Amino acid sequence: MNCLLGIDFGTGGCKITVTSVGGNILAEASREYLTHHPKPHYSEQDHTDWLPALSGCLKEVHE
Image 1 (cartoon, rainbow, N blue to C red):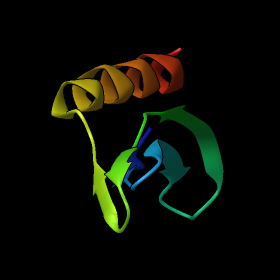
Image 2: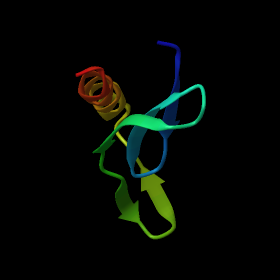
Image 3: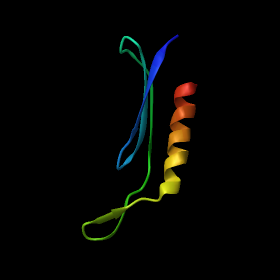
């Protein structure tokens, strides 16, 4: 079956959606990661959180 995979890395987490070519949602998964605010008007993330979030989402939609 042909399908489309959408991956969204946002400021609060990673989301994956798998759809049919016709647009029907077949699977969805999301994982959150932390955004730290060490001082006012300043935000940072630990880049080592991104790959585990992506990997977890991919495993979930594959099941």
